[in-house]
Length: 287
Image 1 (cartoon, rainbow, N blue to C red):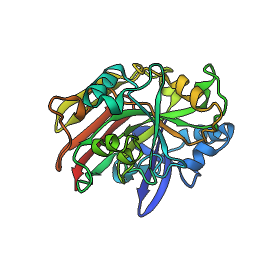
Image 2 (cartoon, one colour; image 1 turned 45 degrees about the vertical axis):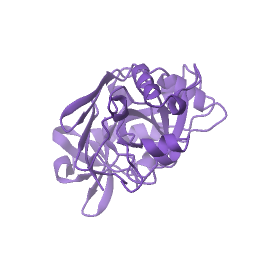
Image 3 (cartoon, helix red, strand yellow; image 1 turned 90 degrees about the vertical axis):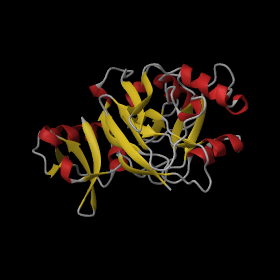
């Protein structure tokens, strides 16, 4: 199943995609309400909706981020593909070298996530090294606390795409990543949530990024150093991950800072992020 948040005539709707690109409106005020619903009730509502004729044309509405206003900051992993870990350490060893065997977790300030098409604000009054990071994001459909490795996928509702836009000078200069990752507009998301039953677990999906038509990132989402079960298990020990939590699982090699010389984003650049089976994000960099 593919779930969208869309805007039509000024009103937002949570929708399920039916046949021929038609959308069925769901009885939820927003995607967070759906994700926080009791799983049994939610499954029943989605099953009924899947059998209905769609009310909206996907091509005729504005597609927003599937979770435009996350309940909490988006949780992210740093350097979770081996080749990206190596390119990050080569760019700035002090900022990116991590303790062996330990995952790097951080959060992105995401009071509002842009949708799958639009602009990335460059914040060039603050930023001189704007970068892109296409990532598979896990969306939780249940509160998760003290979850075992074996049960971790039971808490996953589905998957979407996040572009973890990064200001490298702020990220490295502050010796922590919150400011450099959390500027307004730095968490494009979408185009939808695809429920986990659409894929094997873990999902092994081609993940790619193009900048101005040049292929920069090209990997598969099952190449994570720290797996999705590891992430959910570790983070839920002593900390509750609320239903609706979005976890960006890391980016593969090929980000701008990984080139010699670096290929940072500039005004007018177009970034296209793709994960096969989920869709694409496309944004133009502006001031």
